[in-house]
Image (cartoon, rainbow, N blue to C red; front, top):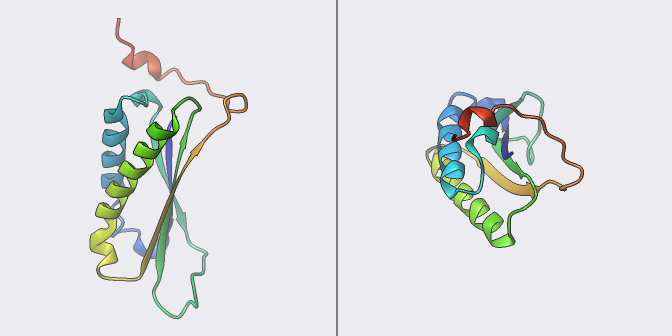
Length: 128
């Protein structure tokens, strides 16, 4: 953990430049010192069937979620969410300047007892 999940309308697939956004998100999350690099993942879910508002314009939306494991304080979660939303807004500003675009973001913390994980990638980053 954390997992950054992007649901994005497919009419902005090229303009969304998600690999660049993912790079910024990973650098930010790792830089906080709160999240182990080996656990950070980003992925896109492209939506080919959707409707927005009155469907009379070429609307687009991007909904993003950051799912994190249990254990950070509210202030740490808030700083994470605010920092990521600043990155998100800056990343999508050029696109927002040229079309109708709705951005939304939420951070959710998983229940400590109901979140199951197995990950040997952490071994690669373990310092001896």
